[in-house]
Length: 167
Image 1 (tube, one colour):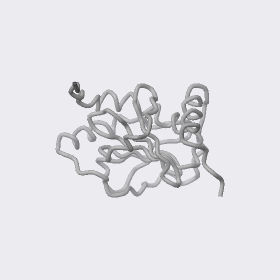
Image 2 (cartoon, helix red, strand yellow):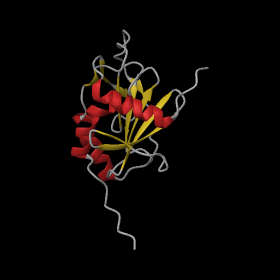
Image 3 (tube, one colour):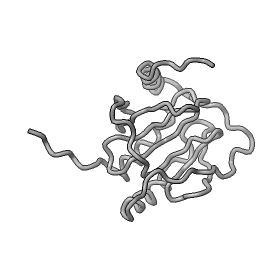
């Protein structure tokens, strides 16, 4: 089994790759347009948070990288979006990421990145609602895939409350 690179080296490669690469993903496999089965949402949301997700999902792009196109989702369609094959999935209103991880900033959005075995989970930091994006290992550069998600996330979800200063 091949070893994964240390996370700090991986983040450096991902962030540098976002600046100059043109495509990070394989061409979608034929038949990759069917619904993606989504898991049970990881967190319970208040009605206002569900409304934010309801505004965010239709504002997300139809394509996040050349050939990585939006797909329908099965299950909780008000909280999830998916693209490509294998599916890159987004959960609106997920549990927060690991606060100990140093954030990577992609197009103005801070993300923690965690190895989840078969890929990486990118989780927003400092927003009014946590967004998680699971990216399978078959994609070479996660930063390129979350980059086009940043503008709608920032516009609709917005920053979280500013913490009170500590003295």
